[in-house]
Length: 247
Image 1 (tube, helix red, strand yellow):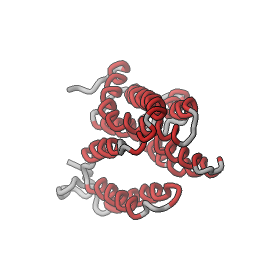
Image 2 (cartoon, helix red, strand yellow):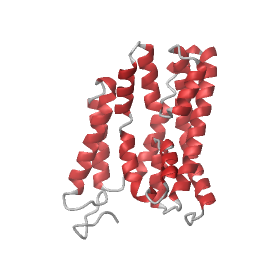
Image 3 (cartoon, one colour):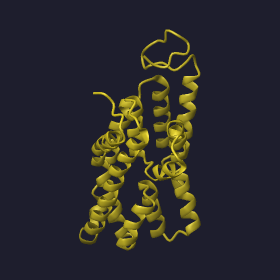
């Protein structure tokens, strides 16, 4: 199927590409809404957080710290560490989105989540244009789902207090596994994934989610190390040229 080359078609393609990921996002939002209620956060505040902050892992961490009585400086610093990966996301997309006006790039930055970034990688492979419209469609799909599921979680959390302990977060893990694995097409990417995964497991007990930052750094280091050793090659395939990246 040819890649869309009109703004409206790219917008629809972004929405459709992100829609299957909501099987993981929606349960995650339900859990957040319920957890926020059980932590004593007013329902309106939980919904406002999903609308204004729009960062699932940071929201979970912030609610947990609020419940434990942590001060605002600690909450801000910790959520900053957790969300540092978004700086890498934006750097990766800079070349494609740089031609857009600043106000458009600033607006799209709001929608830059894990799910939308994953969808953008697929759009790159399929050479979808304009990429900004695709990103907007993806963000509207994911952001709308996150907000609606948070509202549902708040409502259910008031009547089903144990909802947060049902283990629904497994849907998010399964969804991201399905997203990431097809994108691993060469040895450098596989090395980065393995290094980041092992590091996250080994550093799981570190406070303030510092293990996440270490996992990112380990993944970058491993990927660059493999990529610089004779060129990036597809998994299991020897290169025909030193600079061959994939086949």
